Image (tube, rainbow, N blue to C red):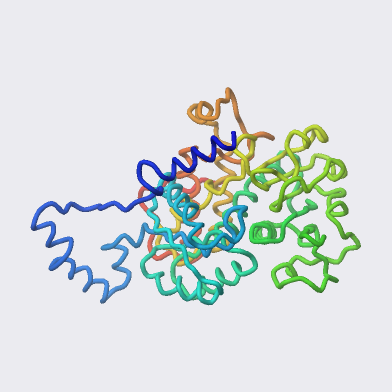
Length: 418
């Protein structure tokens, strides 16, 4: 099975043309007149216009629909620091998803930079080309500083998908799950296993949505992130708590929620059994979750479970987020993707989950019936209505929070709400 998949994957990437993306010419250039418009002398006119007014680049170039997907190759999938060039297939893949789901064009850029400062400098210098920057597969804790500095320096959205994309999908699914279980976010006791980019960003967004800091126990390789530990970086220290508990087993006892963004098979049956009634388990290590769904459902018949896999219900998949978030941001020429826009994306996803599931979605997933409930807390990636629910909400939040350069696009419907 694995050998077949390996060959299929390699063949897919090699034939009939190496790689997964290419550029496309959008204007005719088949006559002398068109050639003179595409290049000299006609091209001088938009050059003059942009020199006078930089925002004219959104009128006369592809900048407004062009995103850079950029990595240093330091944390590629679960493969670790494979280097910039080896990360290129993933960055091309991201480009495929941007185009397929939100009609956004992408240049993938792999930066050979050993130090964050060199990476930041490179991205800063090339940023005028783009309408947005999607950072990808950059190791923590450097990713936090890289994103912060680039966001401060640039006047276009800078979005680290491994942080915020994951956080948005987790929060949308978790809020829906808590509602189904009759629990409130403000009261829920949560365990987050994994203190890297995804874990920290997810807990930050949950706190912004109303989670209480004292109710969150973050766990890394050395145990609970406690206030008395002297080995914490500044990002983990943000979640350090005063507690007598030390281990993952201690943290899991009486917890309402488990969110795993760590590694396979780290949660035992006993740990799951010790959780509170009606628990919610997001075991997102991929391809092998922190606890297998089969074992989890064997131990508890009262849980809601999500994984990162497509062959189980409730897949936490970043493709539900980044294409549509950038679509909304680009359509109003946003200067950033701020927390208000992230919250809007969460609410858009939550609202779509409550809509009747389309027949074509049921057919695609070989299901007879699906509705909002324990096995459907997050929309399916191929639901075409994602474009109707997420970009409008994000665009409106950009306008309301003052980071949009232009008004609401006329083709949008009113942003849906819960």
